[in-house]
Image (tube, rainbow, N blue to C red; front, side, top):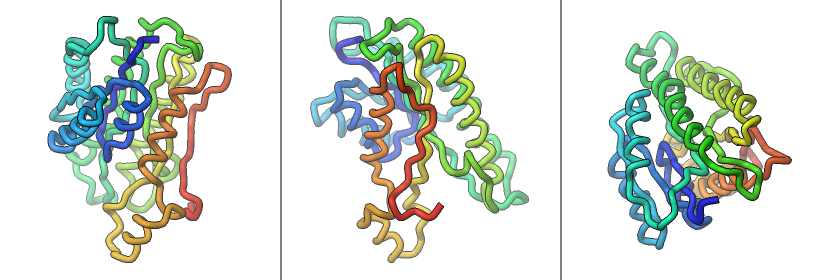
Length: 249
């Protein structure tokens, strides 16, 4: 394995994944639409002694994701050895929660770009990079992880668009797992529901922030991503469902 492998992360979230993988020795290529959050996430890693580089995109279209990988490959990464992409995380989200008759064509395009077009392009670039890697000590060439949600398993009143995208993303990850496992490439997904922003009741927000029994800690989720990347080829997880102890689901 490369002395300091690269993880490519699309979708910043709160930056926990970048910090956890950086501490584990990865260099981080961050792709996202929000330049401010992107800068903060990379600054946090670099100020802590890691190496993270921001690669902003205007959208998650197939072309935008394909083009940004050209920039990642061309970047002058530190070190003498050829940089190897050994892990990748598709964490991009499109939050469309509306009743069906309120969903617009623009909403649908956002869902399709994020969960299908962009995810396909991201996976295509990542898998091509993994195929160039030699087997590491765990018997793998790389790990590609998708972030899912409960909406990938069932629909609800306001999730006709959101769930359709998540169903598609789940099917993509399962298909790639079966196809590329034969080439010692690990494809997996984590199912997680993490949204503080949709909690409007202040008491519920306070409980969510302070009680680990009712919230998913972003740091714990990030450690689960790293756990998947560290699995050896004798026992690979495809789907990991993460929920706090007291969640009703």
